[in-house]
Length: 329
Image (cartoon, rainbow, N blue to C red; front, side, top):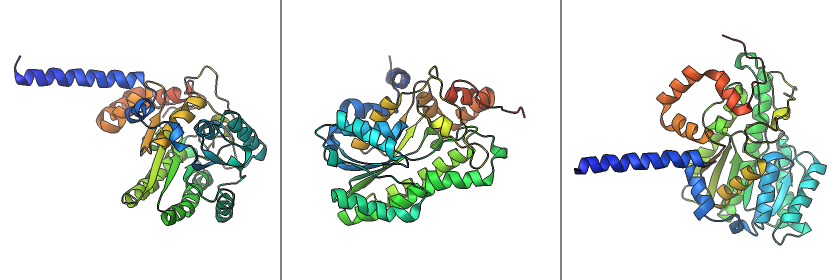
């Protein structure tokens, strides 16, 4: 065979292996590499990590994964009793952790004028902060045109403005100590928009804009930024999701038969991404990750997918069955 033929054969083999790899993993390839050959979560042993939204779901399991690696924790959310439960679970699995190594700090991230006070509480207890994990937030299920503007405001207050307000306080501290790590739980909906979650997709896209800008500004410093982007995960998120009306919750539960990643696996992958200071980490069961590679790197193919498969297909992929009335247009 000639030289050009060999090049074509090698390219075909590499592309085939690449596609097979994407079909076999439950995260992006850089994160998959980090789970095998990167730094372990143990590298965060002794670090002080502040996690918001730590009382359940992904936040709880990030806390458990970090505790297994020996990280000291600040657990924040609104529900004190649930935070205490998570603390005890972390102490049970934690690597050389004692009671003072985990601070329960109840906080509502939408009350931004109290954040400086809460930050001072963290410093008074530990004397330092190494990593902030902004995990608090809520999802949404609603028709785009029916969403009240008040819902958009509530969504951004919780999922965006609270995150920015706390992060700015912490980044100023990191600037003084000349190092630190800001982590934000975004979503695959922040990479490419998800149907019937207009406010949520908009808020997650906003996070990417804000924190990509921060990352670029701090390239010459020791301040790192990580965006965590989970897909469908088992948690109580669906019941707590925003709808199209202010003050209303979606109220439906995730089915045990749904095809979703476990919160334990998601928390572990998030912890690995944090330990390796990855810029962005995607995590979801196949075939979502391969689809997102296509959607991001081949937008014309994405357009064909959307045109021929339709919104119902992607809603079903996310929630396993259609859970809301979708009007035919």
